[in-house]
Image (cartoon, rainbow over all chains, first blue to last red; front, top):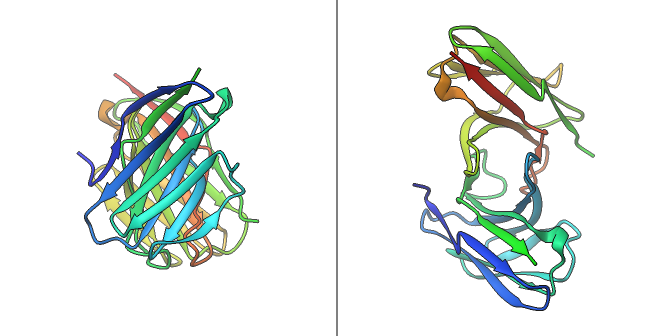
Length: 114
Length: 111
């Protein structure tokens, strides 16, 4: 069991749908991350939030919209996705972006775009 | 731009044997992480290496860091089947939170 909880575990959506991925941690971490991982590839960083403020956006298309409502929650809003966006979306948290501690990853949401 | 290269990408080994996975990074990095990922699962943190000469061990795995050579190694001693997984190294050279991952080494341990 991981300390970072992601819901849903699986999501199938059409290209015109709007959905959201959710991530929650209760470790008091102040940095949270979204990654995209394709099969047999390393995770690719999408966004970093530090103290609830967006600190890194890795030139992610606007059809992905992150939100950090509070220090424990991180959402990823999805709209008008493309088939190539099908992937495993991983949320992670750490004590802080400048702390020398590893990131704790959730189990991910496996997303399929029809 | 920080680049991280791992080799080998695929490793098949027999139980009881030793082997080393290598992780090279292109620019100065102030921290190096090793993660494990089982098929269809999330990433699990194994080691954090911060300084030149750092060595950490957990069970049959030992990680080391040579910052002058920009090289980290993950040594596997007397492999067992349970170690079969994909191992990623990740380097970070800023305080912004961006880690750059290597492509991963998929390890298969056969009886």
